Each structure stands twice: as structure tokens, then as C-alpha cells.
Image 1 (cartoon, helix red, strand yellow):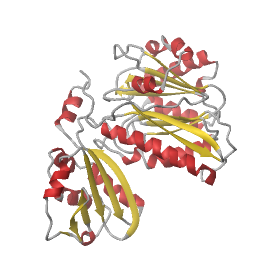
Image 2 (image 1 turned 30 degrees about the vertical axis):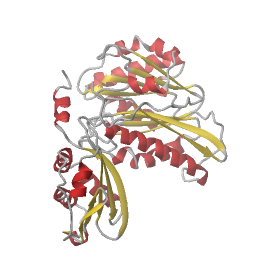
Image 3 (image 1 turned 90 degrees about the horizontal axis):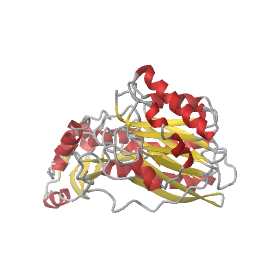
Image 4 (image 1 turned 45 degrees about the horizontal axis):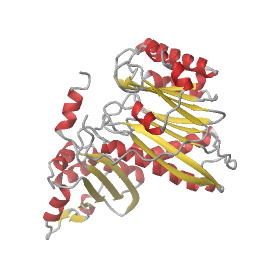
Length: 407
């Protein structure tokens, strides 16, 4: 597989998270010569929070995890498999999830409800839990680093994705590290991908959940590759408590300011890496919207531009066709006044107050379009609403990858 031209130079150095153990194994279910299973487990007490797809056809693992987290009990492990989504698999899908969680729980000495699960791969194919169960001994006793974990969860991805940061809570240093997978079927709600983030901070589950939901809106809910939302979207945040920081009981506690910023950095880094690995991508596109009535309206305008096939194919062809941005803003439904619309590309103002500048020179914009990093800025009025979203171009490579996906 050819690595995306937008990929980072290398997988980053990642800290071990005290109180969290990673292990990987190869089931052979779909892939050969590589690990395709990951187990993340809390070594002691701790908490896990998650956000999931809003799809009406949510996969069995998502349904299981919603149920377990909704019950409010303790959770201590996450089992992940790549190659089979276990989505739209009927009663058999939930039976497979139950069998897997019971099997892992037996190895860890806990209840099945304390084990969460996530799957990625082909939709509609039955999952044979016995194939995964054959490797549970290895998972329960083994250990792996973050790079091995990131590689084990890949499907059509061309590179492993990781990010980390250091923060402080009331004077105590804490670590955050995370991995993600995603390349196609990427759109917010809440972005199509799997993400696994761990910290040694001591945070109760309600605080963890609030922090994760908020950070997701600024990261994984601000990306799109193809506007398609998956059945399996899941992002998990695991806190081991090993850092033994001072107790925090509210997500808006100022003591969490540093942690909140660090979590944003990690999740936005991972989100941008997913876009950089967009199927067939050759351009990374940043879209900034200002002047909207509110942040939600600005986000909607940004995603309308980011999801437009006409905008994305123009950028793939290095065509400075800014009129397609006008179109995408107009169809967003935000109710803007076009006489107040300003458009810039690559830092060059093209149109202002609803019309092209009389002295507009396309040459610097055309030069900008030949690069790998494309910047679009749209101002739609004088409102306080602003948003930043990320996407990639749409090339024939996307068609080729998805036409051959099940082959």
C-alpha cells in the first residue's frame, strides 16, 4: 500500500501511560502477516468515557458499549478488532460481542460488563467470535507499545496515527497519549473513525465524559473526507488515576485548563492525521469561517464547503475556482447575506462585500493551489460565530480504493 503523500515523516515518540497496558495479537480473520486485535486495560481502578456514532444503523459493539456505560458501572478494558465491523449483523452480532466480552472478562477476572469493545471493517459480515477468542490468552498476558497498537487497528489507512501531550492538574504533571484509525467513510456525527486516548490523570467518569464530548466537537466532529458517517464511530478516553492528582469534580474546574488544552491538542492532531490519510488524498484543506451568527452556523458553513464534491475536485485539479466556494456557502442553509460575503484562498482576498475584487490577480492563488496545504477563509458578516474544519481533496484514488474494498 502506498503511504499518503500527506503523511507525517514518522510515528511520534509516545509516553507509556502508567496504569494502562496495551497488547496486540493477530487473529488472521481478514489480514495476514499483521496484528489485527488490540486490548487496552486499566491495571487498577480508573474510568472510561466514550462518544459514539449517531447512526441509526449503529454496530453491535456500539450498542453494547452504550448499554454498559449507560448503566454507570465500572469499566476496565477495551477490546478492538480490525477487518470486520460487526455491523448490521442482527442478533448474531450482539451474541458475538457478548461472547467476546465474556471471554476477555474471564481472562482478566472481571465481569463482562466491565469490558467494552470496538470493531472496524466490512459491514454486514458475521463476526466469528471464536476466531478472536483463540488469542485472548495472548492479549491478557502480553504488552505492546503505542505504535504497535496503532498499527493493529488499521484497515484502509496508509499510516499509523498517534499523538501525545503533557499537562498539569493542580500542580501535578499528567500524560495524555492517543491513537486513531480512519481514512474513508469520514464525516462528523461524530466523525467516522475509532480513537483511543489514555491518561494517567485521576478523573471521575462524569468529568471525563464531559471533557471528551467537548473536545470531540473541536476535533473529530470538525473533519470530513467524504461526508459518509459510519456505523462504528467510537472515541474512548481512559483515565488510570495513577498520577494521583488532586480531586476534580467538575469539568469546568479551572484546575483542568491545562488538561483541557492538552486533550484538544492530542485529539485535533489525530483528527488532522485522519484527513491527511483520506482515501486518495493529495491536498490537506483548512477552512476557517468567521462572522457567522453563532459557532454552530459557522460550523455548518464550513462543513458545506468541506463536503462539496465540486470544491474538492477543483482543489484536486489545482483549479482556483472560488465560485464553487460561493455555491457551497449558499447551500449551507445558514441564511447569510451574500452582500457581506468575503472569500480568501491562500491568504489572498478574492471577493469582498459580495463581489470579486476589481483588481483580483489569480496568479498567487493558482500558485497556492499547487501546494499540498490549502487554506480557505470565509467571512459571512460581523457575527461572533467562528469555526475551523479540515478536509482533503477528492481524487480518482478514492474511487479506486472503495471500488476494490471488499476484493
